[in-house]
Length: 230
Image 1: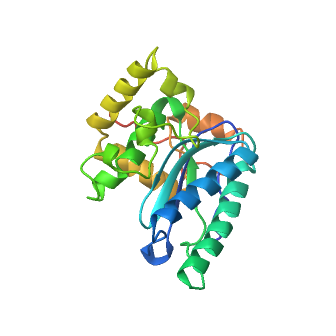
Image 2: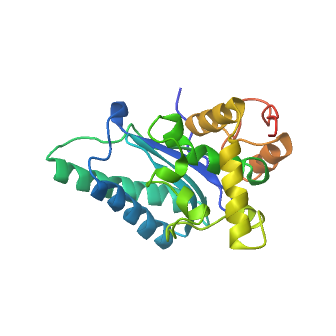
């Protein structure tokens, strides 16, 4: 069965996952993380893609981003992917592929899942046993959102601004969201939707999204089971 084209719709948040081939490491030194972030920043600006959240893990990375055009995310990921492979292969004196095929992505309903997706992304290093708290991990956007550093790559989504009327109140509110975590059900839904390419949202959201694209957005009936709010 032919695989579906990626689901990409301007103005909607997209959760993106890119894995290393056979789960191999895609970073070998601090400079590698810095280089990939610089490439993402360059191409996101050039292609009008707002990156809301990210984490770079040892063998994969996650992005949460909203494009202004249909081609913004595909062109960004293609350009960054190709450039980074050339860079990494040259530094490591290696040849061949680095990525596990094409990147995976889907759309998520902002009002329902955007903040949960940000928390999910921030907690990746904790779930992997790499750090005891997301603030201790240097290669994610978490520190930006809790006021520990300013990250030029990040464009906060409007829903983040609604967390408080001052920077301190927003940072405190977001820190509390991360401390509270997400349910296993939410975690599975966020992972599976991105890997399978089906839109994640309530029935009305999925139905509205389907009217905006010819690409099928759900496996069967529009929508997914409602997840329990925390």
